[in-house]
View 1 (cartoon, rainbow, N blue to C red):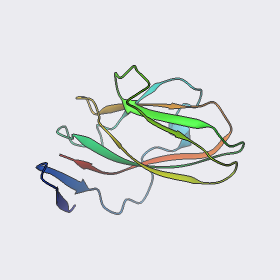
View 2: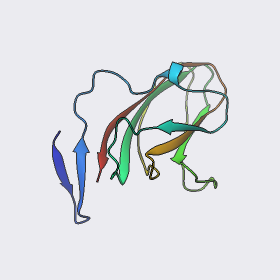
View 3: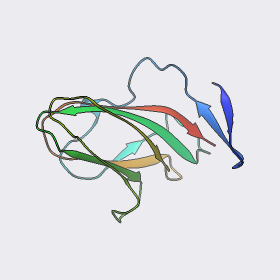
Length: 126
């Protein structure tokens, strides 16, 4: 995995490489508008400061949302919030999140008819 120095921050980016499959697919996720833990501990090391996620999703009515946040955050200000813009169109997003000390984040996916919802860990900053 290549490491890249990131600006003057002293952080290093670790590129996970050319992964062959999504880490989390729709069958791995609960889609009902409630918050759930997403355990990244089998993928990222303990010293990760930021994780780079790629989300590929599609739903059939348009204007549905999902949210990702650091586990334990309760306010709606400092979270990643995304909304689909059209029905039956793939939406692709790249997001940065801070995992908690146990390497968990949390997700909420609005109850809707999602055709697909996939998440892959692209890399991380240490």
